[in-house]
Amino acid sequence: MIVGSDNSVRSVFNAMPRVAVSVFGEEKYEKTSGEAANALPAKSDDQLLADLYDRTAQQTLDDADIDGDGMMSKDEYMAAQKRLADADNRIFDIDAAEDRWSTFDPAGKGAIDKDEIIEGLKILLPLKVGHLDADMVERIRAQALEASKETLQNFQDAIDVESKKPAMSETIKTTIAAQASLLSLYDEFK
Image (cartoon, rainbow, N blue to C red; front, side):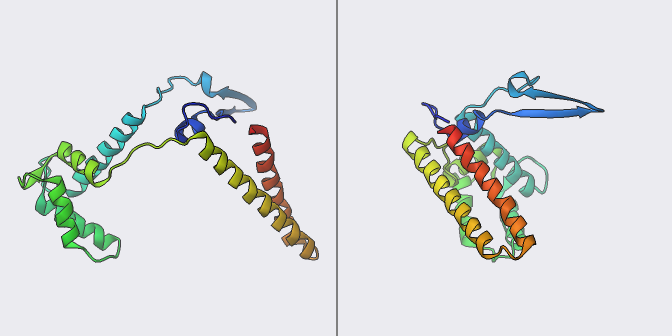
């Protein structure tokens, strides 16, 4: 596999062929991703991040907006944070919650809407879609190859030692076959 100028992790996965197999009675047919009906267009990195912030803000608002007015008050936010801490079996840190609230509501209005939650999330969770340069992709591949070779050798050594235990040997042989398959995939994409 050669990764070109668009080296995002998403592009690596998008480049992989997709095959769907459907079975109706005794008939089988295969459909590649290029033939997929009503396929949605790929989203840009900015669209993906905007969707993430939007969904997170909506979930935050849904969890906190007890009175259903479409706004999140400070009291509603603090109560939701307390419920979350209790659900996670951790101590509610009121100071940290106050700090986060001041990021959501810097003007001190006391209640905020979804758009203001999104702006606060962008400050509290500054995300960006990363891209891998070709050298990093190759280093990751090389590291995965070495790990697979080492695992394969460890299993082969275990078979040599444990050959008197048939159940263990079969399990190890099955795992070796999977590792060998991964190694052949690596060689194929070189």
